[in-house]
Amino acid sequence: MADAPRARKLAKRISQIVASALEHEVKDPRLARVTITDAKVTADLHEATVYYTVLGDSLDAEPDHAGAAAALERATGVLRTLVGQGTGVRFTPTLTFVADTVPDDARRIDDLLARARAADAEVAALASGAVHAGEPDPYRAPREDDDED
Image (cartoon, rainbow, N blue to C red; front, side):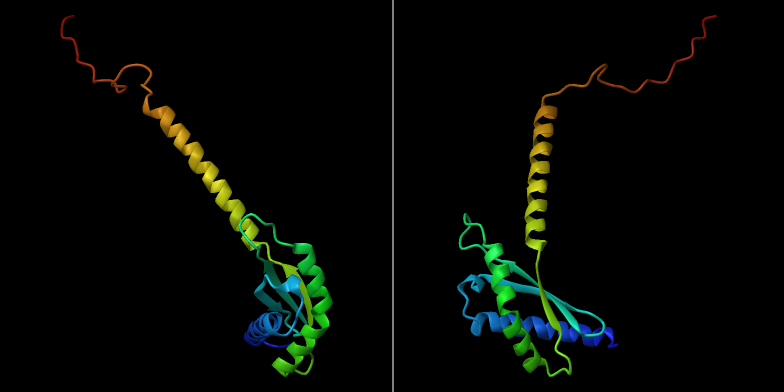
């Protein structure tokens, strides 16, 4: 079993090799907009999980997640060979590609924050013209004792 710093170093090297290979070696057009975001390696250094995200062509176009997943699945053997050559470890880890959900989660959180800001602005607009119910001074003044008994 390897130590954690070695696993982290190997994971970083695997992500660099895979990103470089996707850019220069693999000639699949479905992988043109794929970005490697992270990699994790198990403690025994036998399995590597590579996280990726697919960028859209423009702001309006939806990215092709299914095509990118199929292309990565097809290129796994070539990528594993390149990882083995680039790392020099005794056993080349198996590569598993997982779509990274962080950009989608960040977009969802931004939408929720925008909705909360809009609701706060609506409440502030309603409260700006509101008047208090009851007296203008809601606090009771101290009683004055009557000496007239």
